[in-house]
Length: 323
Image (cartoon, rainbow, N blue to C red):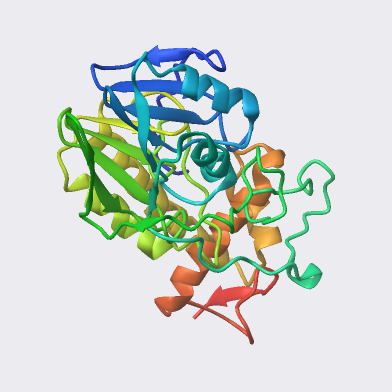
């Protein structure tokens, strides 16, 4: 068993409501709750007067109206900032830009997308577990969690670059792993970090190759552990007020998950479809598909390390064994 993670899940939301979280931060949560989004996507408005919008959220007209309705009289959206290109984060960008004319900022477009090879799908043989996994699907509904291959920022942000307005400064912190283009944003004036999906209090992040990468994810977690941000504001769920403890637990969790895989393969070669039910015993079957994606990321990393091997090409349906 992996060590328990100190999850932070206590949040009360009402879609469309404006929550004033600090002198510089407001949040509006979209009506898109789900197994990947928890209570819904939280869109942040940063600043006063000249405002940045972080993660406009899904392409839902009611959510866009609520975000714009959160502006005080005389305020305007000066910048549209995107943590990464999943449609529940960036899907609403075109509509918001059409109504505000504000420029967009992000690391870049989405990385490589998994192909739709029916022979490389993980199948569990259980109707509850074999339901659709929307995360890597570029054709998923825009209000859900599919890959957004359409977003290309007006301004590409490298690590350490700044987006600023009157009284606020957002520094881009490149944190690849969940996606290759994932950025967190540090608000210097309040000592907080907007963490997108990289670190959330309610759940671990799914890492879905080929764009998701476990080694990069672990390095990005370590990078946050070395920082001194006082509070994390993830796009889903409540504030994380003890961030270093949570990040440490996530690092331990991933290390222990790799150890579990190695232990399981010690009993003999196995496929992902065989490993997930054996290892994710505390996870609902409806989450086995995303668990399979993250397990594939673990297997690729262990293969790169030379600790496991497979005959032929490394695929989701391959049989892996100890080296």
